[in-house]
Amino acid sequence: MNGEHAAGAPAASMTAAWAAVFSMSLGVFGLVGAEFLPASLLTPMASDLAISKGVAGQAVTATATMGVVASLTIAAFTRTIDRRKVLLGLSLLLVLSNLVVAFSTSVEVLLAGRLVLGAALGGFWSLSTAIVMRLVPETSVPKALSVMVSGISAATILAAPVGSYVGDLFGWRVVFAGAAGLGLAVFAFQFATLPPLPPRGRARFGMLVEMISRRRTALAMLAVLMVFGGHMSLFTYIRPFLETVTGIGITAISATLLAFGVANFIGNYLGSMLVARSLLLTLAIMPLTIAALAVLLATAGGTFVVDLALISLWGLAFGTVPVAWSAWVSRHAPEEAESAGGLLVAAINMAIALGAAFGGLILDLNGVQSLFLASGSVLVLGAITVVAGVDTAPAAAARPACG
Image (cartoon, rainbow, N blue to C red; front, side, top):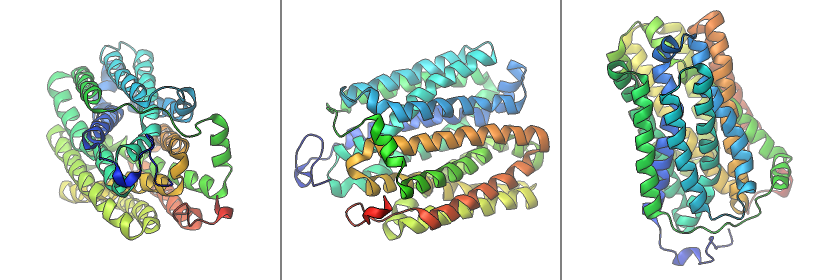
């Protein structure tokens, strides 16, 4: 980064804008919470709209598909606009999307609302790492990334269990209406704390092509596809697993999802420690851990205590994954963080779309246990790809041939 941040001030003399970083974390919380709400509300959504659970799961696919498009285009389309204004606009899209879903009367309207969420999610995520790097001194970037990514863990703790519980009491539409209210609160806090952030860097469509043409970057994106796709095909359909295999009711389901979320939150901070020791090992070992847990759930699951323990360990392991890949962006392409972040988010959202789509297909055809075994296999392939080709050396030390 040559010791310079967006405003041109030397990194060492910057005052960290931690309130703004926290507002980014709140943005992540609102977006990710809304993205994953269908996982906890799949059954009542499907029943109300008279569709199968596999079709209802495509609400996640729609969001992720639009997220791919938004993450690849937002930096270039808004390259002349202050990043503060862009983020505030994306937060308003979060509010709009949840309102559309809350008042949807058909699967088509539901999917339209989820497409709007995808635009907000993909745009926000693709810019987030680059913006956080501008809000704090260079030495504080890893900590700031952990704070921002903790919004994922917080969303996991609250969105799924609270969504399933409140949805059971008042209906799934009330849950999405509440998510819209949360979005308004996030917008207000960001409006109060985010400083002006003039556009910087070389965000353009040609940069995306240039980056993905590098062998090591392409292999990293392939690994992201498999790791996040394998995880998401599991998580989207966790409620059907708990209902049909574990055989528990809504209270126990909410408790299990809460345990997953709490473990995920702890995993977020575990991830920052593991990344400091070895980014490569963190990127590789955690998908293998989740794969092993998926196989155990599929083959030895069925007892509440056992499944609760396995799902909690799954949450702990996955909590490290977003931290590790955000650290990879800041280390791999610090001068092209918006473009690299866009590629990363595009790959993650494509993975979520494919994971939810194929997961729903496998669920409807062969059942949830087959789905868990298939997802575990994909996660293993992702870990192998990390070891085989992902470059985790800092950009200054990386070999030019590695891309």
